[in-house]
Image (tube, rainbow over all chains, first blue to last red; front, side, top):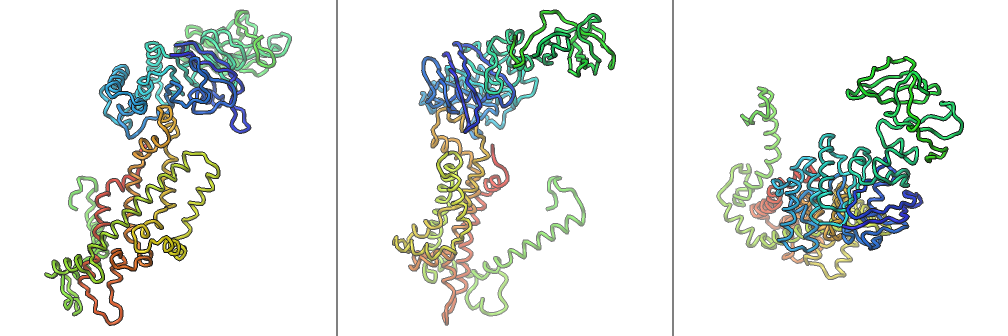
Length: 332
Length: 284
């Protein structure tokens, strides 16, 4: 268990700058999720913490120690890979025990630790099987087990759930969270899935183009996005962005309003034509086209009437729901 | 042939015709070998008197024991042993060297990595026969004529095998190497614990091919072994042929041929399962 701190981390591959200075301080036992679209540098950042990628400039500290030059195994970390990276010719037991064997842990302790991890992950019946004889979810558990048995200071997860089907993903998400709570280990988790980020994180880091746009608790990030990127990326359906001119206001930049904060209202400030409506059962998404062509989505309860396609309606919102951004996309 | 467990549907005449064709093909290919076997079980006068016998005779024991213990120039048992050493030496050496060089080329970043790869690849374009004179010169200067090292060393580097392992290593996911790094395995540890066991089927397939390649070497042993006790079996058979007015001992020569065939056949049969798996699937 340890704190992790990244100070002005930069990374370039040749002449291409991938990460332009990221600062994050992670408290002991905290679950941090790094979320962002593909190509934003989130995996690279994680791999630099793991020691699989060199740091171009800046400093990575685990505990009180600078680890920029340390080999992965010397950093006291464990990593779960997207494709699990299990050794195909080794049994589940050997997969989990390999790191301990290299560290010359006594045999009795290896057995005890693997047994404990296997019990925690319900892998006991499979210890003698090969990875190819396991289902996706079980492989995922073995990968987790391999990380647990080493009792690392920090867990690193690189999109560990993206190879699972939707149902299993939800289940494993809960398990990962429970496991991390139980073990109290600091965790750094990379994902492109904002639902995973919202549900798992103590704090989340929203990455955009090699920069951490916002760091904060999930609800804080959701409710109070600092940039148009964060407002658009976190939340589904995404935030509606309107130009001030559309609302008869001065200034440039954009006004963001979340779909759930909008409601069909004959007195509303915005007029639009219904393009189509998606009834999802519990809720309905009404897609409008505003006068200047902007797409606007309104999320309303299923109890409300669904407007006919092609009809002209007005939507309104409370004043507090408006998030103003300047021309550079920063929150005003 | 009658019942294939339902795998093949009954198709009446078509099925029989297919099998007839296959049987004819097998008979056509196997007939010369059968003739050699028959010739190795009869006496010299029976061979030279036409028509040649088509059924085995009663001289099998005599011919084979004569071949194994005395042969014509050197006892066949000795030549078999020589061939065995050479074939195993070549195949194991080739596998070890190609595994290591492929490992270096795929997993390490060093200056001129690509150049080295292409240099290795380039040697594919120079068969042994083309470079045989300079190679002979080198081996002679090292004093390796009539020795096992002289037989093995010049043939032990293999671009084909290096290329094959390179291709296999490139299909191994990078994450596996990274996971091993996180687990604390150094490069050689990763090689022995992870890569080597994963390449098991490829190694087996390659061993079969290389064993036969080594066993069937003809020109090179012919050049560098002047001492009959260093002769290998394949060239030894040719040495047994009569030159000038000598009388050939055909039954012994045929017995030698049959004996020369046995080790490669055993290797193929013994490693068939791994061999086919290595060629068909790659375990990931």
